[in-house]
Amino acid sequence: KPIHTLISRMNRLAMGDFTTRMEDKSMLSNHPAMKDIRESFNKLAEELENTEMLRGDFINNFSHEFKTPIVSISGFADLLMEKDLDEEERKEYLEIIHDESLRLADLSSRILDLSRLESQAILTDCKQFRLDEQIRQCALVSEQKWKEKGLVFDLSLKPVDYTGNEAMLKEVWLNIIDNAAKFSPDHESVSVTITDSEGDEIAVSFTDHGPGMDEETKAHIFDQFYQGDTSHKTKGNGLGLAMVRKIISLHEGRIEV
Image (cartoon, rainbow, N blue to C red; front, top):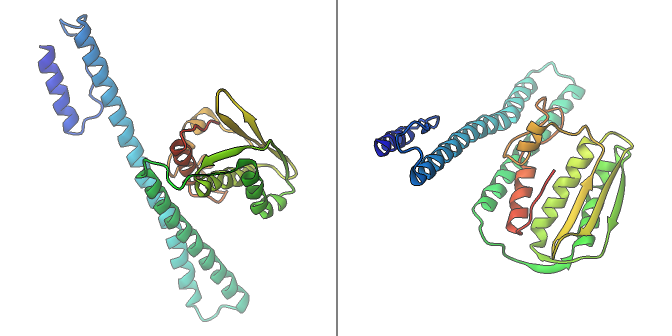
C-alpha cells in the first residue's frame, strides 16, 4: 500500500502538481525506511514547488524590467514626431530615450554576464593581488555617486594578499558600494573593514545607515530580479546581488546580510 501511494504521488509530481505530499497515514509509517522515503519525497516536492514559484516570479520580473524602458522609448519617440514641440521639450525627450536605451543595454549585458556565471563551475584566471588596495580603488571609482550625497567612507583595511579572480571580485565590491551609496541618507557614513576570521578566512564587512530591511527582503535580496524597493524609486534591476552571490560562491566564500 505505501509503495502504491508513493507511485501515485510521484505520478502527480510528474504531471506538475508540486503541492502533493505523502501523509503519515500508512500502515508502515513507523518503518524507518518508509519514514525516510516519505520525508525525502515531501522535501523534493517542496523544493520543486519553490522552484516553480521562483520561475514564475523570474518571468514576471524579467518581463517588467524589459518592458518598462521599451514602452518609455516608444512613447517618447512618438512625442518627438509631433511638430509643435519646442527645442527644450525635444531635448528632454531625447535625454529620456538616451537614458532608457542605456538602461536596456545595461540590463541585457548583466543578464548575459549572470548567465555566463551561472554556467561556470570552476574559477579561472586566478592570481594573487592586494585585496585591500582593490577595495580602496573601487571606492574611488564610485566616488562620484557617494560624494553627490555627501557620504563619508570610513575605510579600515588591513593589508591582505588574496588569490582569486581579480576582475570578478572587483564587480562584487562595486555592486556593494553602489548599494550602500544608493540607500544611505545624505551626509551619513559608510564603513568598510577587513578582518581575519576563523582559519584562513578573510572577512570583508560593509556597514551603512540606510533604512534596513525586513526578514522577507533579507531572504530574497540575492534572487534574480528581486528588488526590496517595490516602488522602483531607486535605479536598479535586481541582478547585481545575484551576480555577487555567484562570484562569492565560485571563490568558495559566503555572503550574509
